[in-house]
Picture 1 (cartoon, rainbow, N blue to C red):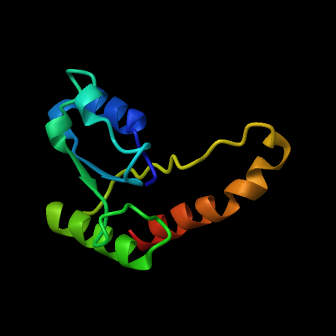
Picture 2 (tube, one colour; picture 1 turned 135 degrees about the vertical axis):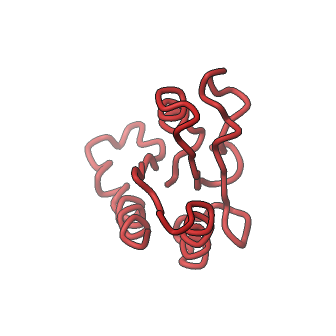
Length: 117
């Protein structure tokens, strides 16, 4: 969730090899997944980026989260996820003392999405 460019996913795929399959959800654009830069042992073909019906990766959209859950459900034969990582964030340079306040909504959305998975 909000995991572009994909470093944590890359690490799991590298460590677990072909026994893992990844599903990613993040904003399109500057912070999109960089599977072409994954470590050669990370098997980027086992990683499925998804951006929702609006094709924007907006974590705040309930439609996107519901659609993401359905993609995961279908792709795992209903087994769903064993691990879910939430790596969302943004630049808080100069505002480090209030970064928790600034990130509150994003963190809540990631938790909400996790509860729906």
